Amino acid sequence: MKKTSVLFLFIALCLCIISCIKCEPSTLNPFDTLQDSKNDSRDKIVVISDLHLGNDLSYSETVAHLKRLEEFLAEIRTSKTVKELVIAGDMIDDWYIPTRTDTYGGGTQADFVRKTVNSNKGVFDELNKIIKEKRVKVTYIPGNHDMGFTAENINIAMPGVNQARDGGDKFGIGTYNPDGYPEIAIEHGHRYDFFCSIAPGANESEAPGATLPPGYFFARIAANSFVNPTSKEAATKVPEVILNNEGDPEQYSKHQYYKLWKFVMEEVIYVSDNFSEPIIKTNVGNFTKTYSINDIMPRNSDTDGSIQMNLYNGLFTQANWDARSQYNNVDIMTDINDAISGSLNTEFLDNQSKVQYFHNSDSKVRVVIFGHTHKPMIKPFKNLEGKDCIYANSGTWEDLKTRNKSAAIDQDAEKMNFLIVAPVNSDKKKLHIGLYQYKYGKHVLGESSEISL
Image 1 (cartoon, one colour):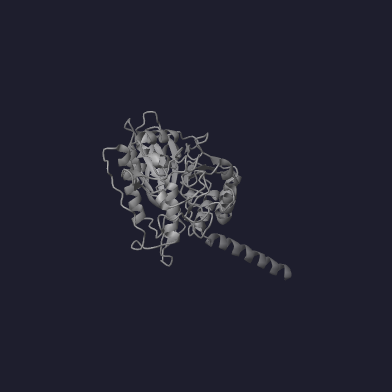
Image 2: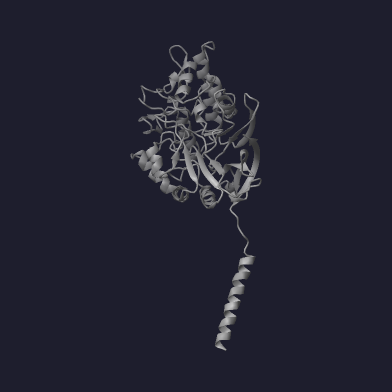
């Protein structure tokens, strides 16, 4: 009788287990269910950018999205079909720091990196699992917000990560061609941006050896604008600057620069600070002084009425812009005034995919991916031979910014963009390029395109 009872219990337990197995829904990794893909081998390239992982979560640009980013990286790690993960710049951020904050707090860049890793521990834990397991190749490309980080210090955050850099002393830029795809070029896109490309020799009297461009100071003021918010009405107004010699190309370019600053300081990153007060602590990238906003802003000279400025005064000739572009390994030179206005009107930057690659007779690239602008998109082009080309922008993972700290924002529906590049039905020469949003933890396809290489 006892043996019979034990047998019945064993059978009941088995039936229960079988029943549970049948009833439990099967969950497939979303990267392994891509439409038009055979999903039977590691052949997908995932591109993300502009994570803006901050040192201090009290002012970091990415806080609300951190848990979702951890989940997303865990999906990449457990996928059976992702081949590469490419991080296309602006990963660790030492630009978006409130003006009065000493960036490194008296420590070193390596200390800053370690603190940033600790502040974003879950994200770096997942990334480093992917790198350590070596099933998915992880490549890091520098952007402008992390242009000053040495390869050694990036390796502190992500030991063993592949780093795509142009080499030499130009470690703040890089272009990556994924394995087996010389027709694909991935870079951050900041080398074409007047505000954000490396600026050698820009301030030798103020900061010998400094290469950080004007966009660095823009980011510092922007952080202050959101951490210490004011209203447009209460914000400090930008003094008027007059173009007294329109026929002087340098003066004209300086006035274009002034108009851009006036717009952003009154409409985008307005602050209530006294523009003459030294509030921008630097101690980063060979800058050691504390500057005022007036040090960056153009002004009319008291002597002859010409437009001058304390910082970056010598950048505003076409010859200087050409030399600076060449330093940044730009192939095709652009007009300085287009580049100045294009820092805000980002269509100029998106179109550099065409100018520098598709309409460059020395380039065979057919797919270009940038980050930087935070504006996700897929845009078709034709190259000089009439062949189809695709430009894609990978968007951003930063939170939606708000000055109203009590505003109800559904951050789970904002940004968190990524790109998937994958062969169509395992045909290596026919690619699906999909732009997705990680919305409520799901892969939501925004737009996509196909190209035959």
